[in-house]
Image (cartoon, rainbow, N blue to C red; front, side, top):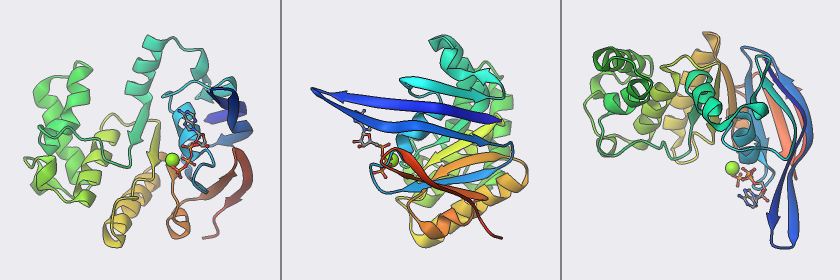
Amino acid sequence: MIKVNNLIKKFQMGDTELIALKELVFTIPEGQFVAITGKSGSGKSTLLYQMSLLDKPNSGEISIDKNDIIALEEDQKIVFRLNNIGYIFQDYALLPSLTASENIALPMIMKGIDQQIAMDRAKESLDKVGLRDKVDNLPNQLSGGQQQRVSIARSITHKPKILFADEPTANLDTESSEIILHIFKKLNEEGQTIVMVTHEPEYAQFADRIIELQDGNIISDKLVKK
Ligand SMILES: Nc1ncnc2c1ncn2[C@@H]1O[C@H](COP(=O)(O)OP(=O)(O)OP(=O)(O)O)[C@@H](O)[C@H]1O
Ligand SMILES: [Mg+2]
């Protein structure tokens, strides 16, 4: 369902040009849980940005369910993202003045969904990540792991085709990290396609497949033995 072909991303810094992604070619079938690993600076976040329409590559092709996402106009990209993409950031990216349920409901309300329906769906999503009792908590009244669970709940309410996560456990202790990984595992078992960047080899083992980057190249692409 995701096809990446000859993907190139360059950054121009003064006179020097850095090629962050070097003609990457791979496909991700629907329902797969993929971990992207590699050293700092290897291009993991850059790759996620290109696949989730947050940035535009220099050349190459990316299609999601046969939609050529690079060819979309800016306003079409916004609509495509709202409907098809879920994105989880390392730092949760919650709005501090909104409660857990309001943070989750906001993107739905922005899409024009009735406020009451949005709040009901927000509570269902919080239930899915085990935080039903925290609906009215503000982000600063939640632990880091709980904030990340709210951010996951927010990213799945619109049933995205693909869930992207960039180092979702980077700021968390082992116990909270494992809770997050188990949530991903459960979502994947329910059919959710997931692309997750992680530094931790043991967390990559939760995935079906591990793609390793080095200096913008794929140096290994393996299925995880179960
Ligand atoms: N906006 C930018 N301008 C210039 N160079 C950039 C930009 N974004 C990334 N780079 C460079 O591209 C390369 C890949 O960066 P990227 O952020 O994708 O690495 P990463 O694998 O996610 O690293 P980390 O594990 O530290 O998050 C790095 O050399 C980085 O310095
Ligand atoms: Mg990164």
